[in-house]
View 1: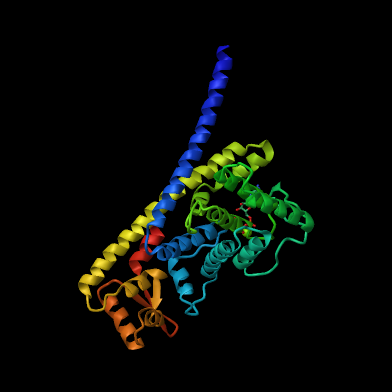
View 2: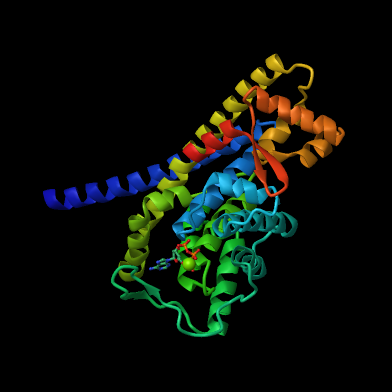
Length: 353
Ligand SMILES: Nc1ncnc2c1ncn2[C@@H]1O[C@H](COP(=O)(O)OP(=O)(O)OP(=O)(O)O)[C@@H](O)[C@H]1O
Ligand SMILES: [Mg+2]
C-alpha cells in the first residue's frame, strides 16, 4: 500500500513539475513580449539580437567568425570573409521567413525551402538522392536514417505543415514548438542546413502565433551550450519514446532564453542611453536622433549611410563621423578604399553576450 502511494505520489510530482515548467516558460516569454512591445527603437534591437543569433546558430555548424567580420560584410564594403558571409545569409533567411509568414499568415513547405536556400546559398531544395544519414561525429556510427525518398519526405513535410497550421488540436503552443522541432529535424528534408532551418522555424512559429511580435527569441545559444543533451534527447525520443524530457529541455530553453533576451535588450538600451548622453554633452551642435540611431542600426556605419540618414552632404557626414571618432564614440577602419566607422562599445557588448 505504502509503495503504491509512493509511486502515485512520485507520478503526481512529475506531472506537477512538468506543468510548472510550462507555466514558467510561458510566463517568461510573455514578459519578453510585453517588454519588447514597449521599446521605441525596436528595429535596432532586432538587428542586434538577430546578429547574435545568426552567429550562435552558425557556430553550432562550426561556422565561427567574429562580430567585427560580420559587420564589415554587412556594410557591403566588398569585404570578404566566408564564415561571416554565411552568418549574414542566416540573418537574411530569418528576415525572409519573417516577412513571408507575415504576408501569408501560415508556414508552408515552400517557405521552409526558401529559408534553407537562403542559408545555404543554393537551390538544391529537398533531398532527391538517397544516402543521408545522421552519424555520431566521433565514432562515425549511424544514429538515425531519415526518410530517403523525395516523395516520402514531401508527404511528411505536408503532414508537418498541417500540424503547424492547425490551431484546433488543443495542444499548448509551446509544446507544439517542441514537437515541430523534433519532427522537422527527423524528416531532415535537406542535404544540409536542417539544424539552422529548424531553429529559424521555431521563432517563426512563435511569431505566427503571436507569442512574440518580433523575431527576437532564439534557442541557438542554449542549444550550443547544451549540445550533448540536445543530441542525446533526440535519440531518447526516437529510441524510448521519451518525449517528456525532450519537451522539458526545450521549454527550459525558452524560459532561460526569454530572460537572457530581456537582459540583453536592457543592456543595449542602457548603453544607448549613456552613449546618447555623452554624444549630446560633448557634441551638442551635431547631435540628432537620426545620427545616433544610425550609429546603432548596424553597428558599423559609413559616410554614405549618414548622408542618407541625416540628409546632409558628404562633407558634413564625414565631419560628423570624424568628430565622433575624436571623442572616442567611434573607431574608423579602412576597408579597400572605403572608411568604416564602428560603434566599438556596442560591438563589445554584443560579443560579450
Ligand atoms: N538523432 C537525431 N535525430 C533527429 N535530428 C537530429 C539528430 N541528431 C541531430 N539532428 C538534427 O540535425 C541537425 C544537423 O543537421 P544539418 O547538418 O543538416 O544542419 P546544419 O544546420 O547544417 O547543422 P547544425 O544544426 O549543426 O548547425 C542538428 O542541429 C539537429 O537538429
Ligand atoms: Mg550541416
